[in-house]
Image (cartoon, rainbow, N blue to C red; front, side, top):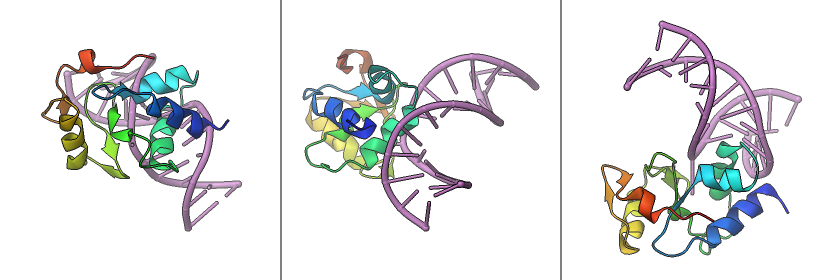
Length: 100
DNA sequence: AGTCGAGCGCGCA
DNA sequence: TGCGCGCTCGACT
């Protein structure tokens, strides 16, 4: 099982209306390769199945989506799932945060 | 406080 | 081979 596949696995498990962070994922994989987590999501082979928009920075800001940084579409998607974004940050970030 | 540098795993040149 | 990335953290101003 490759590192990136594990990352994708975890992403798939994020329930609707919840988010998680790169840090948490990396921690779950027992590694400090936080950057690699972002890279893995970028290079995922199943872009449709993987809800990578639910993965964000540990400070509550958004990170990137679909290969780009600061993607407005990511905000839309999260909004649709019931997560509010303000000032490029997740509102009530702690409450929406999904812990595995 | 704000800034800087290093560490990780993998993809791409 | 070598570099850079959807990041984080600790050390230094």
